[in-house]
Every structure is written in structure tokens, then in C-alpha cells.
Image (cartoon, rainbow, N blue to C red; front, side, top):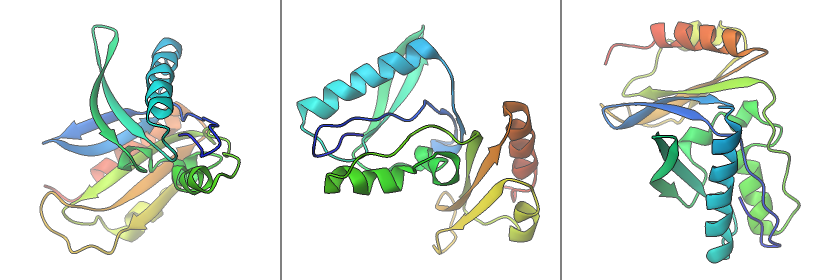
Length: 176
């Protein structure tokens, strides 16, 4: 992201898993120093070229060790929803800070995080919330096939614990 004052900050990369063209879940941080540095270089060039203020998300594929841009979103993005509970400052707060010319907040993760989309129908809320470190977000949208109607975020002290919780959440999801 870039502020109206030209300050830039970057969140760590997230590894996204898609199914049928829809983002199912994101795992963060995805720690790969050289890819992180390249992604930040590309993003900073775009932000400066367009004199952009706010969050700008670029979805990259990794192909042959290179980053290939797939999608660009000039806004906060679903793949960054893990930042709501999983970063010191969420992408939503930092977007507002950026466009208002306020100092940008810390983009460091506050643990090992994940965001899991609820697609089409919501899982049983109590079953999801019974899991430690899991947070529920219901968008209040009418359920229908293929529609993102909510998500949950997972924050854990270790990648192993995060991944265990993600598997538990995925097992509690209604069949598609």
C-alpha cells in the first residue's frame, strides 16, 4: 500500500488455494525472502507510477521460480482478510490511513494466520467458534452457490497449529 504522502508498506505474501476459480483459503505469512522482495519491487513500481494511494493487491502465480501477475485489485482484497485479526494493523485500517494521509501501521503478522472463505452456505457457527484462535465473519449476504458469504480467520502461535486448525475448519464446512 502507499499513502498520499508516498509512504509504502507491504504485508507478507500469502499462499492462496483456489477451487473452481474461487479463493477457498489463504495461508500467511508465506515466507520466501526472494519472492517477497520481488513482489514488493513490482508493487512499489506500480504504486509510484500511478501515484496510487491505498491498498493495491496483486495476485501472483509462481511459475518456474518467477512471479507472474494474475490479478490486480485496487482495493482491500479477500486474500488479505487474514489481516483483520492476524496483523498488527489490518488492510482495512491501513487503507483508510493511506487515503487520509495518516502514518501507515505495522503490517507484521501477529502469528501464523489463515483466512477460509464460506462459499454458498455457512458452516455451523458454534462448531467453528469452538476452535481456539478462530474468528467468525458473516457478510449478511443471501446464500447461493459460488457466492462468498463470509469467512473465518485463524491465528495460531505456530504454522503447525495453524495448519491443524485449518484442516479442522475445512472438515466442518458444508459439502459443495
